[in-house]
Structure formats: C-alpha cells, structure tokens
Image (tube, rainbow, N blue to C red; front, side, top):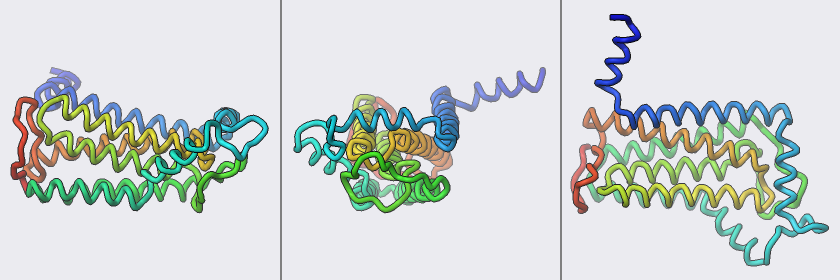
Length: 249
C-alpha cells in the first residue's frame, strides 16, 4: 500500500468531513486575505475603493452620506457594535453563560480566543499601516491606521467566535443556525457602517471580515480538538433537549 493510500485511509477513519470543510475555509480565508493585502499594497484596489466610497455620498456634497439623517445616526449606532466596550460586554455575557454551565474550560478558551484575535487585529494594523480614506469627511473620530478594519475584524473575531462556541453546545440545528446567522449579521452591519461613515476603504472591511472569519473557524476547530481531550465542554448532539448542564472543566 502506498503512503498516499495509507494517508487517505487514516483520514477517512479519523477526520470528519465537517472538520475538513472548516479547515479548507480557514485556509481559503487566509489565502484570500493575503491576496487582497497584496493588491492593496500595490494600489490595485484604489479605483474600486474610491468608486464605492463616492457611491455612498450625496452627489455634490461629499460631507453628506446618502439617505436621510436618521440613517447616518443608525450607522453610528451600528459601528459602536464593533467598539472595544461593546465587544467586551458581549464577551463577558457569553463567559457568564458558560460560568452558569460550570464549563470552566470553555470560559478560559473563550477569553483566550477573543483576546488573541483582537491582539492579532491590532498587530495587522501596525504591520500594514494604510492611511485612512481622505476622499470624504469622516463620520466618526478615528485614530489608528486603516488596513484591515479593526472594527470589522474585531467584530468578526468576537461575534463569530462567540457564536460558534455557543452554537456548538446548543441542541438542535435550528437554534445553532439562528445563533450563527445572528453573529454573521452583526459582523456584517459593523463593516458596512464603517464604509458608510467614510472611515474605511471597502477593502479594509473585506480584509477584516476574511481574517476575523478565518480566526473564528480556527477557534472552532481547536475547540473540537480540546473537547475530544476533555478540556472543554463537548458539542451537543442535534437530538439533545435543552436545559443547563455542567460541562467538562
């Protein structure tokens, strides 16, 4: 038997299809982020970025985003969902959920996952150091560099990671899908608001989404590995009934 055949047989016995799919998405997300970063550094995305940013402004008045005034107010409210304080509160709330379940391993893993992703976001911004858009006035105050969008990446890291960790211990596919959909929608709204308010190029936001989603999926895979070793709470089976129960510590 060839080495390739032995490797294939081992994978069939030990690796689940879902794990392979998620791993492929992680690799694909990181590859897409790298390709996008390369295009941004070479200036290839400038025209597209400017076109989208200008399309969200009232013709003849670049200081005025399209739509009535309440839309701009709503944009500021949505962008706050990606701020450090709000993300910390959501993280604390979900950590409390696992404390109630006495799943201490999940509490530690959750904090490490979200905290690590946020540190990665700050590191990426320092590495690329892309200037903020100067094409239109900013709708909110900003003090850091532009690529990747910190709000978009931190929102994706936090909401998608929290959503994935909570969904894996919830019974029923519908409930899992609802939690993950809510996490995706919240992450998307934060990113769109950053472009609407003129504080990020669209490619900044796309990069933040790609990196944040890849991080969240990687954390999901690590959680599955730790669950097999009894370090964190195991994933709930779809047919399990609801209710609080203690997890592995």
